[in-house]
Each structure stands twice: as C-alpha cells, then as structure tokens.
Length: 259
Image (cartoon, rainbow, N blue to C red):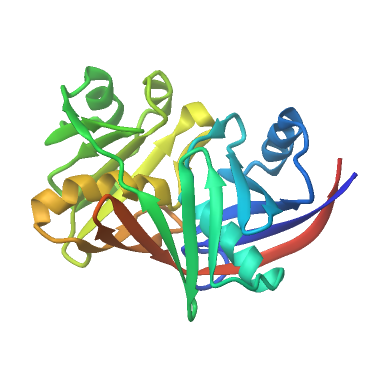
C-alpha cells in the first residue's frame, strides 16, 4: 500500500524552523496499529492522519509512542496540506478530533486555529519537578500537562531537565513558562513518556498557558515564543471559552511511503 505524505514545518516562516509534522491524507481509515508504526518510523513529535468526509475532516495525531487527544502544530500542518497542496475549496476546515470540532481558516500566510481553552488547577510543587529542573518554580498547575511557572526567562531558556524524572510523571508532559521582555511570555515543553524529549513548538500547550497568563497579564491577546532550539512564535487571542492560535507553515517534503 502506498500513502502520500507531506512533512510540514509548522509555526515557521521558512524550513528548519518551527515544529515539523508528517501529514498523511487517507481515503479511508487504516488500522490504528499501522498508523502508530508509521508515526514511530517517522520519528517526529507528531504524525497526523486525516480522512475527508463531506464538510468534515476526521483527524488523528500520533507521537512515536502513543496517540494523543490534542495537537496544535500537526493540526496547522494538516490545514496547510489541505489548503496549499490539495486545493481545499471551503473557507474553513472543520476537523473532527478527540478534542471535538477544531476549525482552521486561512488569512493570507497565516492559519488561525480555533481550540478549546484548557482549565488549569493549582497543585503542590512536586519534588520530582523541582528535582528534574534543579530550580524551584514559582507555581505549578495541572491540566492536560503540568504548567510550571518560573520567575526568570533565563531559567526557562537555560535549564536542562532530567528527562528520566519527567518520564515518571503522570500527565502527558511538562510545560515551563515565564514572563519575557520581548514577548508576553516564553515557554518550553517536554514529553519524554510520549517519545518527545523536547517539542519545538507545542500549539496545544498554549490552550493551557493562556488560562494562566490571562490572569497575570490581564489581557486576552498574547504574542509568545517557544524557546526550543528551532524556536517558534505563536500568537493567541482568547474568544470566550475558545482560543485562536495563529501561525505560519512551510512545506519541507512531499513523497510516498510504502507499507
């Protein structure tokens, strides 16, 4: 069986920036175990698969180790493939996912994703988190991931976490964040238990981060930076219980796989 594939750098204005995702359009769903093996073979933080069904596109995301309930950059990458490579004619793509309907529209070079905001709950600072980062955070919150707030941007930028300890935590991953001089805030994201030591740009993390920073900064629009080696800038705007996440994308690779 041959499958068309696209590798897209999401939250990027040129190749080798942002977060790469592999996108595999399907005529019909294939076995989940096969999709997981393809994601493992690709060895990117996410591989997205979608099937078009009339006005709805069903979308699923896989890390090298597990299927996940939400992924921002692979949704952006999938929208890029539909709009730019497959001549999708509707103005808005409606993705049906494990996180409900996620809409994406295109405005010039930007893709605007409509995601649900994730509520966060304060929690005690885990000794494992403090041990993993070697820095005592200001606060820790739990949601889909742990949200760990540091006082200084330099701590977020320079810390080298103990991934073996982070792998023992019970949630999907850990997102660390702080205020920034240039941006509203900065962040980094680690999910070693899902096969992602550090994710370059994590759209889904921003659905949680805005819940914290809206209270601290008293605003509903944010311009943020994920401080990975590749890096990526993310614009967010709160819309009630939803958040619009805006970014660009570029195509790196188009090919065919045989499975």
